[in-house]
Image (cartoon, rainbow, N blue to C red; front, top):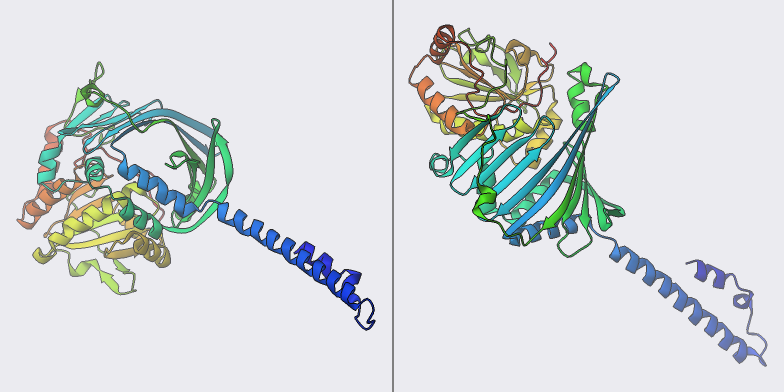
Length: 467
């Protein structure tokens, strides 16, 4: 464009052709200038188009990475994970390393060392082993038995994912979650040239670095949790000054890895104890949740269409399930579809279910449900007042209320066998069994155990909501 402007400002273009003697010469010179200008203009446009076409497209890179993962038969990769937390003027850095091994269709091993989240999750195709190093405990689950019960939740879902992974469906799901994508630039990680892309979702901003190669292997992932923390801080002011940064570096990719059976066989460390479910020292030292055996507190709320909800209409008549959750809470998001599925299968038998969202507004929840294709009956708790009534100290918290109107069971956190446990409990409550009485009687006869009824407990908040 600059070339064109220069030509148009040339004195030659201001000449007239009124002089017959040199008209042809002047006309020829002008034609050459116009041809030259046109040539340079087309070259400039060509360079602009080529540069634009050469710039990597973030969604194409994501699709390419997923497509390559879809054809992989086996692979291994090492991960360096760094978590930095700044709070109340103090800074804490937690570093850990991990190794991932995968052989389709059903063998994998995730071995994480260092930091409080050190753990091993391993499948040999027949059984699943989960080991938590901080507790020195491990649990073993039969994959065949769980599958027969429809149990594909938690870590067992990894095996199901290896068998059923579809790059096209995965890309379609991620496309619905991603609201905006942007190419940041080319950068080197450990001397490997990568394309740095940024993906915006309703829950977080995620930066991803892809290798500049046909496979588009991921070399780094950095989630920005600022928006999630900001939403949580609206209800928990103590979190207003909290800053969290998280970085995962992936290295030593081997996309043609060769393994032996020993690579997927768990060898318990010295002192490790096999358990049915995991415990946290002192977690249940006070016994069952204080509401167990008590009359369930009635409340009034509205759903996403602002229709009124009155719990009193169901108390003392039907079995009720309340699942306290939030869109920013990853364990909640993992557990919610399972709770919704199980309770939905009992709807015709009188079970009432509400997903009580803690501290978020209607637009935030609606956008999230649309992006995740979830259809759940939501009860709004924007001021966390309902959560306060039910003694919520960590989410997800799932409360089961019997036909007698009493709180029968309280689960805090999300574990691997939630579907089976919830199904069994609903069957007993529909039959009129008093699970609270059994639990309270057991707690007075024996020393409290710290076992979680739904497996390894994972929560996303340990602070009691305001109000």
